[in-house]
Length: 514
Image (cartoon, rainbow, N blue to C red):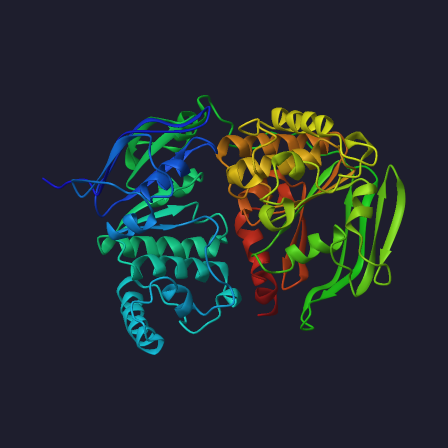
């Protein structure tokens, strides 16, 4: 009889008063893809961190291939053939692919010998598993999808037979996700056991053989993927029926809040990332910006939020504070934009939205720290803590602990805290980047509902998302960016995903020319 590749029995883990894992049992068969789903804070990442040796279980046992093992650290996990690819990659961006893979596992005191041996081993791994990456490329210059391959190469180079993937598609484009799934199926065919932590239920249905559901630290269900569906999994995760589609009324656009005229922006190498953009955004509507990642969406958000100054063109912002014009001769000023009533939910919550080493109470007031409500001259800790608790309560941030380090919240709860900080101020203009990246299904429903409510109260919302379904569901109008240019400006209800995809690929124009 074949033993499970991984067998967890009675796993318990507490962090103070928080019981993160409660009597968890889990069985994963070899050569399968097993999904683990649950809301943010459900305990799935904690469970996998115990399996990989980052944490020690308070009670319970771990079996690998039928043998009880003691995993005290990640080296123990690696010695038992367990590898882990984290949601936020652990790579040195200035190092080459080969140097990153070798780091900490050189295997020989003479570097030239170690390098030659590693290169030979990696070339074989690339061939065996279809994980082709230029070993001499600088990691920081690689696309995100290729960086992820580097992390997988690292795991296999260290002898992994069991691979834990934590939210692996959270930073990937739809095209990169398809390529990634091809890799997973190849790995599975080679006998690799894969544990996939994700909140994307459609991906669970598309790629896994079986799935386990966690809720509030407990394991509530195990299912064969072929015998379940998205609706059942969503209800098991949240503990109630979940509205998977966006329920919204017809938009009632008002006055123009944001007017962009001939805006262009070049990077430090002189490459034009935004090219003569023209569009308007009105009160009471959501304008979606669609496009494959890297086509100017990030630069557009940075220019409109005051982080960067365009070299050409101008844009005006009209809010309750009056009308303000911004041109290429006016220095960028993100603080001024906030003072005008322009909110900004950044695409990258870690690099732009918070400081991981700060307590949540400090991340919760970033950008607004000079508000008189938080103190006159000196900070008022009580006022800041009360404001943070209010944000956490209103936006279901778990745990409700203003003193907890920002880094110690799950990705989804970090995201909800940033969204609360921006949206509870009811800005006239709201710039939103990837609002549900790395967020579970219950929180997605919550965030979508709040964006629609803000629109109905008169906010003008610019939405950037690589999730095509999200753009289609939330937007009233959609503009499409291809290589920094607008290739389409359409009414959302008048276009389907296929035609929008053509605009994203600029295929419509090519067909017309032909």
